Length: 503
Image (cartoon, rainbow, N blue to C red; front, side, top):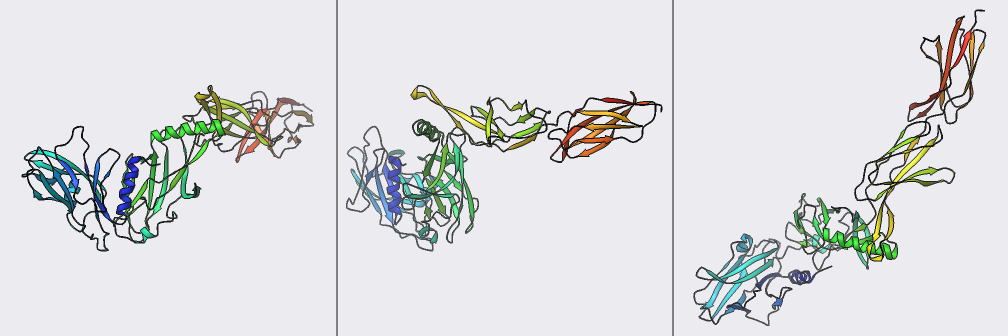
């Protein structure tokens, strides 16, 4: 997971896990600098090394910090300057003003100088140097107004050891689920869709021991940034035992890499999801303790998938005795949607329609009246293997909610006849109905009135009150189905007319 640059960084941090180290490195130049730099004692334990850029790096180490925050001052690091062309008698050395923190934390002075040689020493300015990481300082060697040599400096001071250091080997202070990969435990948080533009994961961390968390850091060379695109964020809650939520974003280059790997896994092994583990995160405490370095990795993880992850919400609305109207919101970065309806005979959901990604509704027709139906919708993504003859495979996302709906009851069949001065109406049972309403009208210009409401689904016989003689009456019936405390009515039956005679 680490680049060569990170490996060198780890070497540095490993040294300072017990000591404070200050680095001074020669800036690489295309032409040979007239002033050469060497370290006085080559037998010292802090020997120079070459970084990934080919630059010579010098180190300065100190012992740990005490409980009062004071470091044990190290021996001065002596650097020797030599030149065959520049007179070093009247040189000046100083910390570059562009880095105010380095200028505050470090001291540099000339020990001796002659025409061809000079010695300078570098050390911390005091015993209470900041515990911040600092990689951008420079020692400037000047002659008059000209800078004849730059020596880059990177340093970090030790921290006060506390229980949050020695007791941190467990990941129980992090949210997420436990997992094991290659024999190493990690905490996993969620799953990301590699087809999304802004894939993020989230963790919650509780500070340990008797100190609060000051900040969180990510390695710039890693595959992640914080949600705002930065590599350093301040802790929102800095109290003891406080909780902080850390939102982490996958870099676009890493998402592209994961997508290529997952497409290949799908083609070769029919796998659409993989586990990712990273240890790029560091936690900085108020006292300077930094957790998550080379001796104490913070292994966090997440899953990556090529399946559509956006959750769909399906709505179903009653349209008629044979139709149900389905609706949903459009999803981005999917190839289409598959609609499923429950088949009670087969006791499973059966696909009834496949629609393009632009569609946001569908009407299911030719249904039976007065029935209850169940639906779900599943987004899918068509994955093409361009390196294998453009083969294509469909990957389904997560199912939506189950949408329940009914069709309106059918049209009743009735028979009506006169019985004295009354009308007798026989109503044939309608499948799926919850009840019936009987409507009666006197004369052609009269208004229909509900004269009877029946609850329950069975054959009914209605008998009116005594009606007026020599009048024509019209009767009709319609069935209803109760759903979610509301009555849904089907079509009216054929109207029957019955005349009440004079005698």
